[in-house]
Structures are given as C-alpha cells and as structure tokens.
Amino acid sequence: EADIYQTPRYLVIGTGKKITLECSQTMGHDKMYWYQQDPGMELHLIHYSYGVNSTEKGDLSSESTVSRIRTEHFPLTLESARPSHTSQYLCASSADGRNTEAFFGQGTRLTVV
Amino acid sequence: GENVEQHPSTLSVQEGDSAVIKCTYSDSASNYFPWYKQELGKRPQLIIDIRSNVGEKKDQRIAVTLNKTAKHFSLHITETQPEDSAVYFCAASIGTGGFKTIFGAGTRLFVKA
Image (tube, rainbow over all chains, first blue to last red; front, top):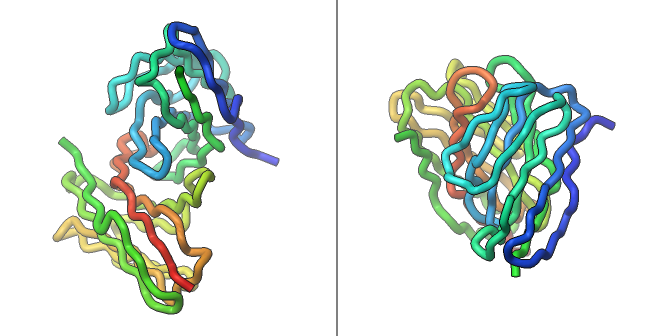
C-alpha cells in the first residue's frame, strides 16, 4: 500500500547526541516536507524538497539538516541534540502539479534529556 | 509576510449541533485552501479542500466556503458527532506543488455526547 513512513515513532536521547529521523514514501511523490509540531499545536515548516538533490529551508529556523539523494527518502539529521529540540516531527509528501494535498507520516516524537 | 489566522482556538459543541471554524489569509495570490483533521496522536489528514475558482464545496456533513474578496474561508460541520472531536487546521497555498502552504494555528473541537 502506498504510504509515507517515519522511523522511529518515539525517541528519547541524551543531549549532544547526533540523530537521524527517517522518512520514506512509496507514493511516487516528488515533493517532500518536514514539519515541527508540538502535540496538537501549530505546524511549522522547517525543510522541503522539490525533488532529488533539492533542499530548502522552511519558514521556521531549525538547526537540523536534510538530504534528498533518492526520490523516496528524505532523512532529517540533528548533529547535536538539545532539550529545545524536543517536539514532534512530521514528514509529508505531495504530488507534482497544481495545488495538491499533502500526505503526512505518523510522526516521530523526539525527547532530548 | 504571509499569514493565516484561524478562529476559534477551541470550540465545544453539543452532539448534533453545528460547528463553524473561520480562517483569513493575507496573500491574495493564494488559490488553494485545504482543511486537515488531526485526531489525538495521529497524523493530519485532508478532509476537504477548495480552489479559488469555487465559492463553496460540500461533502456529506462537511462544507467549506470561500470569499476571495474578503480573503476569508470557513469550515462548517453539521450534525456533529463525538468522532468529529479533533484539531482542525486550515491552510492557504500559493502556486504549484503547495510549497507556499501556510497553516493556521488549529482549532481544537470538542463534541460533547
């Protein structure tokens, strides 16, 4: 079944550690996004990609980085996690073309202690 | 800058009553207006959308209206049920692909049985 997958679902990690949040989609979408969301609160766009080798920063400043080496894969990396990074991270994708809906992954809930 | 304001932030209704959520947007170039529903602990999912060449769209108990002149759009839920309880996000999108998608802050809807 075509979907968008995020791993891990939950992660508790110590300050200063490097982490990578995985996102993969089997929907054949060119466009992918990362949003940061505290539970039930606003969605903040932190990164997006038009396609392979394309990455852009979103509206909310973030210390994370992303890469897009394959169409289906859009990982997000934090080089040195801090407690302020504690949040939920949602990956999404959308089809090419004019004004199409975004499909979201289940999210990764990150806690930095 | 671009902005989407959403009201109210919290809405409590009795089962069977109607619920209305209102959004205004700032960029007159916006031409796609999706609404997402996010249940507790789950991912946001599209429930209805409207494009700028349409004034109203209905899908069973859900309807959306758009007033381009006033830059205002609304979500209407009739005959509310407890399973309608969730956070609802409006969004406004510009151009192709939905990259310039700006989300509202969300409305937490409680439907009391």
